Length: 388
Image (cartoon, rainbow, N blue to C red; front, side, top):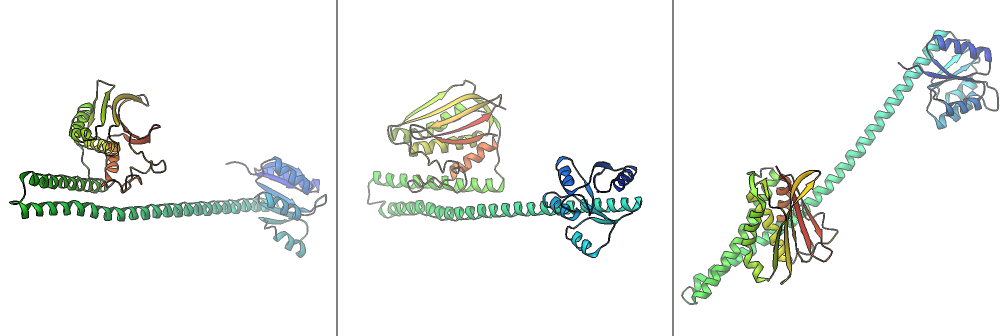
């Protein structure tokens, strides 16, 4: 156990030396002996002091009580007053400094020890209590801050979800009306219109039906993600082969807009451990967005390459378009559920779910989906998947 370091403030040298000897035999360490208030103040500024034995009548301009007031205004050190007088007026003055003890001289060694130990014990209890209260207040403030932050997040999420539900209702209702409308035309005019016209009706029904199927698949995927029930069939897959299959699906759309699609494979080994169907879903979503927002006769570049990520090899995938880009203040939130860029919100029938779902799929593959605006216009979406 560490010895308590005690400062003796006493103007009578004989009493000071006797007190010092008593303290030493009791096992305490003496910081110093001073005979004035100024000396006491100077000493505690220079040396660590655990307790002060303070005589009330001192040499100099200030007595022990005034010295205690000055010390306690700048330091938190327990003080025990020593005095040969028990004057009520002096005692009342001393009380105002909230001392930890009051010893009448002459005092016995055992009385000195009891006074010191009780003062140190009470001081420690107060310090522990203050720390506990400070910790509790800090914890309460942190908890309140977390509650406010979480409440704000939930409020924002609920608002976004409400808007999303309204949007989904509209997105489902619109193709449903198309299906009912075109099928109704077909039924009523099956013997009155040409075969080409009927084919047109059936194509529109098929297109809107596919649109509804995609939308319902996204809603189902979202519900699985929220419930933590998205399943993955992880096995060896060829990222280049998956990319080729997905781009073939969009060949008609690419040709209609006369988009120049370029695929750069900078690494012959594009084998990774992944769920091929889910990975194709991500690439399909990214390519669909790129085609949708890239003007006619512009370029889309898909790059597959190997990178060393923290000294571990990783396979990178990026798709760069020349589209409308994403506002800088929104680029960090486009992967959030129910969130959509303000540039695309009113220009497409998209729900904004695709990127959120894609982001979660890439996370499940121990990767990260990123987005950044190109200096020359458009956006680049990319992700890296570790070789496993």
